[in-house]
Image (cartoon, helix red, strand yellow):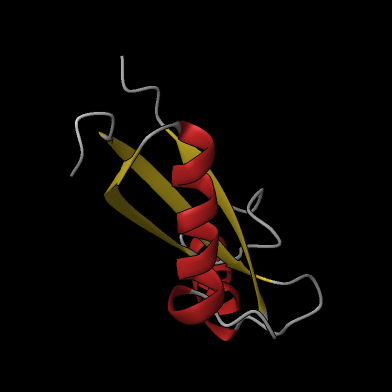
Length: 89
């Protein structure tokens, strides 16, 4: 890590694209309804990945995280992702 690099916390949220069947979400929705939570609907299950990236600024950390998503972390055929970079200050 160079003197200018900072460790930045990055959160990546991955979810199925709209229109992709989510059997896990349907199972959870059904269980919630059977437990009396009838107001629960359209349950979707996703995942969150938290990591630290050494980068000179938030923009660079965002770019690197997006590259990670495109190459490994998300199946971009059926999943969308969003990236949040925490302010290192």
